Image (cartoon, rainbow, N blue to C red; front, side, top):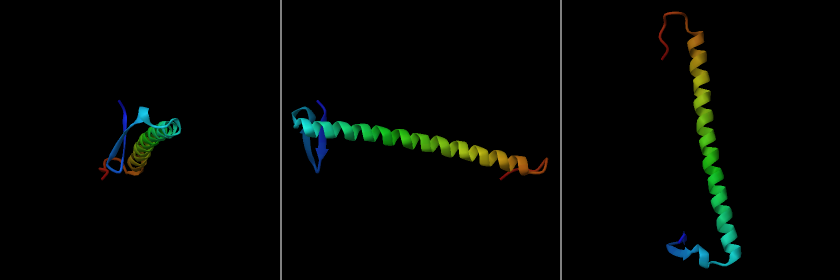
Length: 67
């Protein structure tokens, strides 16, 4: 059974009132969205850094090493 822990107290989700269960379900959806957004942000940072690296390489005179 799934449980919800709040302030050191555990609750059986199936035993909570329907309104509370709906809120718990929405919290889980929001948490999944946050995880997806964090993953997207990490991917965008990687792509951004790749652009920075490419620009640095393109601006270096031939034969010089890039830091």
